Length: 326
Image (cartoon, rainbow, N blue to C red; front, side, top):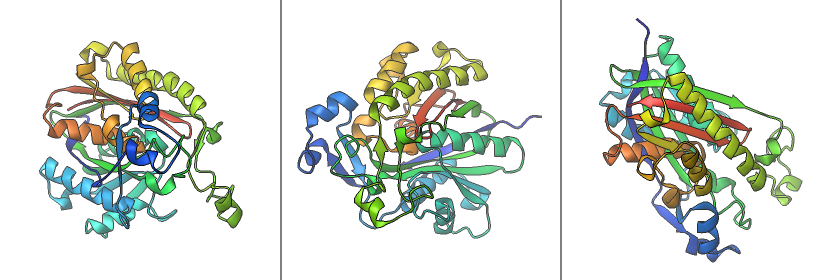
C-alpha cells in the first residue's frame, strides 16, 4: 500500500515585540496610510535582542510536537526553511536540533526565500512517502529584521519575524494531496541580499553600499507574483484533482494584500475562505503560510477533513503550490 504523508500537528511562534506603522513613522519617511494602502500591513513582530532564528524555530517546533501528540523522540528528520539563518553555515536546522536535545538525527536547511515552506513541504512529503522517514519536523523560521535597512522605506515596512512548524508523517486521514514547485534564476537582482556571498564577499565596501541588506525591485516582483502564484495554485489543484469550489480554505503567501486579493478574485475565493493575517504580522517570508495555518487551526477555523490550498512566490525567483487534506 502506498504511504500517504499528512499533517499530524502544527504550531507557530511570534516574538512579543510589536512594531506598528506609527512606530515606523518615527524612524523612516513613511506613513501609516502609505503602508496600509500599498501593502495591507498594520503591524509586524520583531525578535528580541539576542533572539535568533533557531530560538523561534525551537518554540514553533515544540508547539507542533505537542499538537501532534507525539514524543520528541518520534521525530527522525528535521527540515528547516529559512533565508535568515543563525550563521551563513552550518545549517540552522542543526542548531534547532541541538536545542531540541537531538544529537543523532539528520537536519538540514532549505533555501527558497518566501516559497521555502512549500519547497520544504515537498521534501518532507517525499521523505515520508519514500518510506525513509516516519515523522519529519518541518519548520519555517525567519528573523528578517536582521537583514533590513531601516532607512529604506520600500523594504523595511514589509517584513516581520516569526516561525511556523508542522509534523509531517503517515496519517490515516490527513493527506498532502499535491505539491508543485518551480524556479527561474535569471533575475536574482529582483529580490535578494547581494552582499556576503561569493559574488560580493563581505567587505567594508559591501557594508558601505548596504549590500548586506535586502534589496528589491518591487514592480518586477509584483508582476511576477501575480503571474506565478495563480499558476502554482492551478498546477497544485490539478495534481490533487480538486476544483477551487472543493477547496475549503486558501492560504496565500502573505506578502502584499493586493496580490492576495488579486489571486482570490481570479479563483473566485470568497473572503470567508481566504485566510489572511498580513495586517498583524507583515511578510515573514517562508513562515507566512505555516503561521497562518497553525493560527487558523488553533482558533478552530480549519478543521479535520478540510481541504486547504497554498500558493507562494519569492526571491530566486521561486514559486510553488500545494493542496492538503487536514
